[in-house]
Image 1 (tube, rainbow, N blue to C red):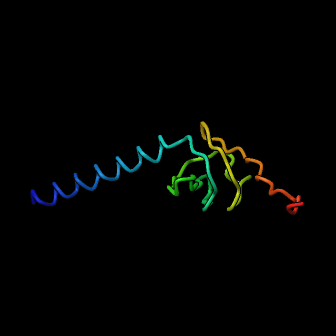
Image 2: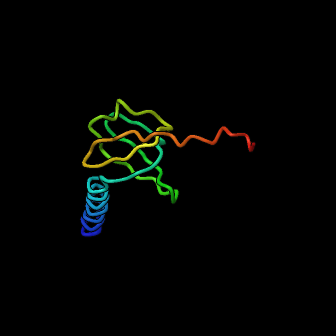
Length: 87
């Protein structure tokens, strides 16, 4: 019986710590890899994916470059390639 209590406590602690990291990971910059309701998954330049709550997630689609600050995603302008053709 005591073992079940310890396991339940461990599961609760792991879940709580996971939610804390989800909640406080609010400022991130990168490419949107997934949109789920009000949550965005953003991959930064180092390749790390972060899931954040976003009030305007419906305005963003997969592949957009965004800067998320204080729960609001701002789309970034795509970098344009030089069209000089090397002349």
